[in-house]
Length: 133
Image (cartoon, rainbow, N blue to C red; front, side, top):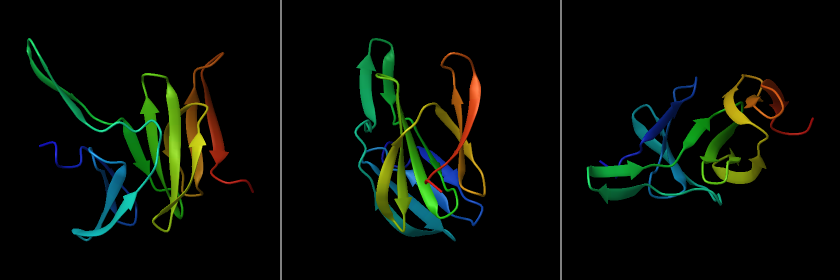
């Protein structure tokens, strides 16, 4: 069970993204075929882990979301240990950067804008582009 991707996302063009639970990489499927395996580099990525407790077994998987705004692919990681939020940016199957986000990434639109929820000071929605225009 732990060898298969645990997190899936879909794009409007039919691609399906699956996060590898053991390595900082994700799989891209199109038309039921593996199209690409894309490797990333993120300091807060943690692979899936198992624990055996007195009441049974439990596992912890990476907390991530994969979003495909415009020509980019974003892999958004959350670290609950230090409350870090980082989105790795991929273009043409290569990581081109990372963003430290000011809030929780909730969605993207067809123009490539990010929608974040921030709880600092007061709850608010932040809309911003991936790149400077």
